[in-house]
Length: 179
Image (cartoon, rainbow, N blue to C red; front, side, top):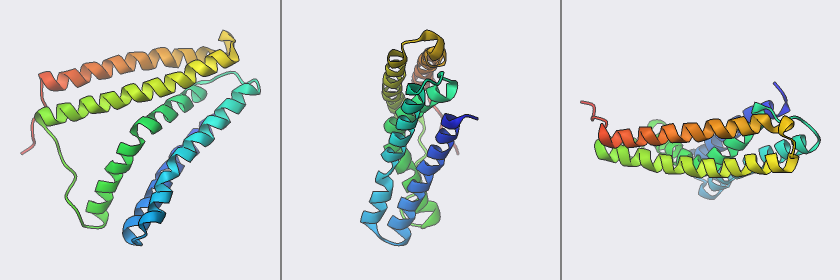
């Protein structure tokens, strides 16, 4: 695995570590502000990945799938970061701290609506990640060095379309409640 591949792994681990530190600090040690500081570090991790990827390509590296995934990672992290933190927060409070309501299990139109909102976040992630991919392609200005970026952009466009079809299908065939 190359440098960027390892950076993605470290950034993903770092993302969940700062979230866990934030939640433990917030709920176990009852330090709300310090917990919020840890949670606010998640964008710093994205910035580190962005800078590392940009420098690697600027110094002449040929773009690999790892460089493209870095752009996707940043888009997903920005678009879904808050909802992932909220998801972890609800589960930490309920399963670890034994306080608060259980995580909500949606069905029917509520589930379909939530999935459609998730698709909206996917569109935002796509726009952010695509902006980085297109910027890198433009900055390098050498199709032989940016093929992995272009290929990822095309694949992600297809995935976004399939995700829309799945979102619509939840309205046509709503998820049934268990039990």
